[in-house]
Image: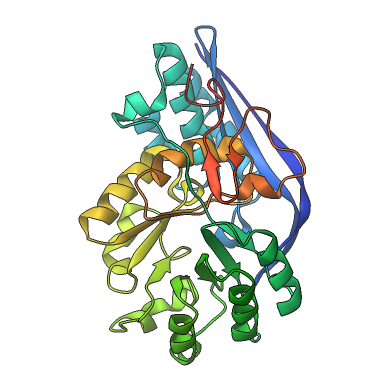
Length: 328
C-alpha cells in the first residue's frame, strides 16, 4: 500500500513578475509526495487561472484519486484518471521520482536517454517602462537568450530598449496572447530588424485561426494554444514551434509524447515553465534536452528555492544535485 500526501506551498518572489495578464508576487504551487517501500517520490504543479485551475481545484483532483494511487495506479493509468493540468503533473512527476528511487536508478535511464546537462535557458525580462526593461536587460546582457514580455502598448519601444542593452543575446518575444494579426504584420519587419529568434503566442489561443496561411519572417511558437499531442493537428497549421510545459501536458509522461509528436511533424520544440521551484524544473530538463529553446528560469524569481535545486549560471541552467529529483 502506498501513502499519498499533498499540500499547497506559497513561495515568495524576489521581485514582481509582470506579464500582459497581471502581476504576481508569489509562486503558488502544489506538492505531491507518494511513499512506497521506504522510498518517497515528489512532484510539483502550478495551477494556472488561465486554464481554469485553482489551488483548491487541483488539491481536490488529487484527493479524488487517492484510493487509486494507494492501490498502485501507475503513470499510464493516471492518464485516464485526471485531465491534463497541474494536478496530474504533480502526481505524474512524483510517480517518476518514486520509480527511480525504488529501482535504484534515475529517470533518464527509465526514459532511455542521456541525463540532462547544463543547457541554455532564457532569462525573462518582464513588462515595465522601456528604461526599466533596458536596465534589467543590461544586468543579464551576457546571457545567450532573453525572453522579453510585452503587451500591445508600444511593444516596439520596449523591444528596442532591450536590444540596445543586450546586443548579443538571442530574443524570444512573448506577448502572452495580447496582440492581433494586424499588430503582428505591422511589427514583423521590426522583429526581423531586432534579430528576434521567436515570437511566442502573440494572439489569443481561441482566436488563432488568423494565423493559418500566414508565413511569418520570424517563427511563431504555440504556448497557450497547445497542451497535449491531441492539439497538434490544428497547431501545425498555425505555428512553427511548440512550447511544451509539463503543467499544460499534465506531467512528464504526456510531455514526452507531445515532444515526440511535435518533432514527427517537423515543428520546432521549446520547453517552458511556470514561475515555480526547482521541483518543477528538474523533470522539465528531460524535455529541454530535446529542445531548440528552453525557458526554465522560474526558480530564479524565488526569494528562496528548494535546497539542492537547479542553478542558473548567467543564462545556463545547471541540473539539480544528485538525489534532488529523479535520481538516487
